Length: 92
Image 1 (cartoon, rainbow, N blue to C red):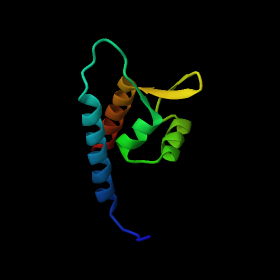
Image 2: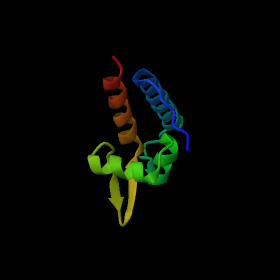
Image 3: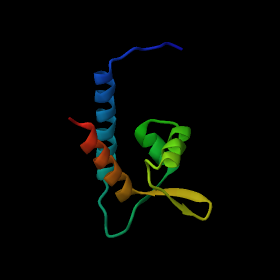
């Protein structure tokens, strides 16, 4: 495994690009009055992280989720709102 060293500013720029990409992917679908639910796998794919990372975000309360029977789902609107809040507070 190769170690890459980047500055904090470069890391911040990468995070901002990922957030923008995630927002654009989630925002492409049109809503017709129904709430869209996404799975943990969808969230992991969207952010390019592992399921372990998604679980950690859930435990820390960073990502709102809902249980339906034994399965976990995320409301698209809540994920979008969370991403907007992260973007708002990340940018100087």
